[in-house]
Length: 64
Image (cartoon, rainbow, N blue to C red; front, side):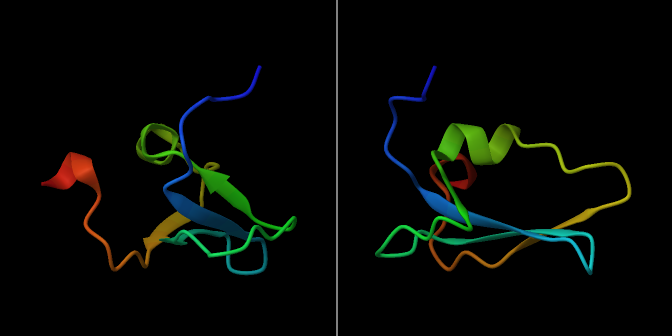
């Protein structure tokens, strides 16, 4: 089942540095990256031992 919400951020998994990188939504979908809605970005849990780097320039709605 797919999420029906619009994507809000693009997420990359950087395996070499063990990072989950969250960035502003790219204008075009990249099949190597994940486009997630705001709720799924906020609920995302990185793999054990990984860090999250949030590079978004737009303020997420939950943080306002």
